[in-house]
Length: 285
Image (tube, rainbow, N blue to C red; front, side, top):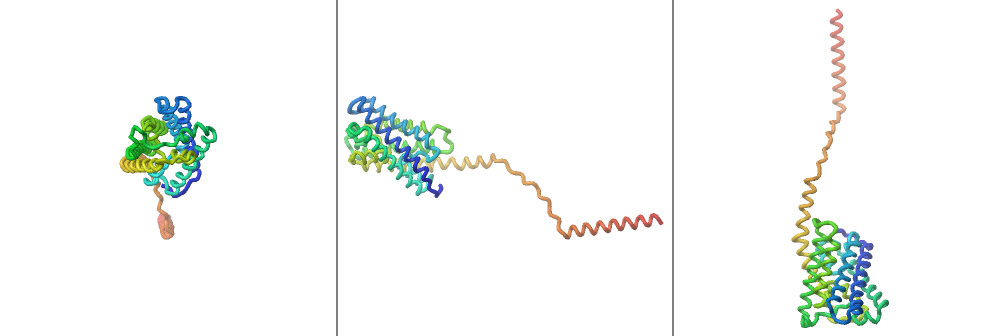
């Protein structure tokens, strides 16, 4: 984890979250135009595709820059597991919320009347299928967010995950979770996704559910996935790198000859020459 803050990454989070909160709720608004009020199979598929495609494409676009969290319920587990610094995490969340608000205002500017009919995509709490039970709604959002963050940690964070699958995996999971979650709670799994449209529409009923439940689900998934699976893989990878790395052969350094040794060598050379000279003189006699 680095202690440095990276405002460029914060800006990337704002853009990516803008895309989610623009195209996701836009799919909801247009589904009403195309298929009428209520949740038909066609409208659910359209909403799920809008959210899943926005997330998947933004992961590919900004994943290598900021990690493309696009969600405070993803950023908070990343801070807890020390994948990013606390300072960076706070910056991420602030810019995610900012991007969500700007996106929702964009929808209000473009489609003010039609968007207002669905509160610009704001989730409305547990549905009649859950008997409007708050506990059931919280449970559903915790479970949905748990599996979203699970996929994120095991495809985008895990060092042994196959390369290039994180965008389609995360986007595919978002698609699946919206297919089953939209009829139950509206399938937020993301406080920023609900917060932006709520600010613009003024619809705050049971808003707290979409903060509490996703954050709890995200933290549970992040902690389990990180300490059970992600961290277990990293020592093995480091060990393989150590084994496979060829050892550098250090050239043997020649011993430096001291001044005393040089003097002794010169002295012995002189003695040898003198002895040879004496020997030659004896031979001549």
